[in-house]
Image (cartoon, rainbow, N blue to C red; front, side):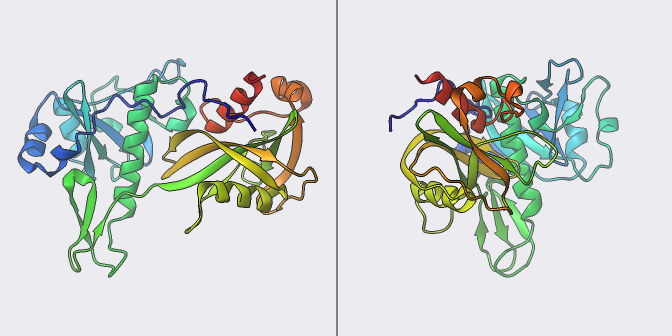
Length: 308
């Protein structure tokens, strides 16, 4: 099985930020950056990001400075240093405690929108920064207490570490690895209709989380066998995609299908089929839809179709 290279970067990659990790431990530098009126803040409200131009179909991220940023910070939610954007500090701040954060902001600042709804329209750098902020703020809001002893945790390292106030255990942001794979057999690929999307006609690549003690290739073979009953041979890496919805990274592969008969796991899939190149090139004419354009699943399919 030949390797199929990624044709272009995936959505949410290509961050313009220098993460400047060494600055996280410099409390004086962080304090000065927080007080600097030119510092940029990207607010997150209940997992949504601040944008304008959404209704017009030309979304762009809104990053706050000065007094506008201060009013959002006064909402009292967690914050974290993300890095430097053209030498300007960038922080994420969660304002989910506010029932409606828009009155805290000047007029014309847009609204809070689910990033996934517009990621394919955002400039790639902006999408990456918003995804970064969303993922880190999700971790901060969901890990306020120690998983060892249950006591409250306090943030350290500019929001990148939570330290238990009782047992002193340190907790770090987690990213859950998930494999996602396009299984190919001859001139056909295997796509499944997930039970999670019963009201759509979308057929997508199979995917699943990596288990403890498992290699990525082993996870690919296990997930395909469990979900569709297909034996997999060669596994070739394609690309990866941050997927902070809420805290995953998708590791994309093309995989060689060794068997043909499909036996689905009804808890995971409503249906699975082998689709020809012709069908995938014109899915609407054949009664199904491909995955969303910003997904690595779509990229795996498109790059296979382009590889003759």
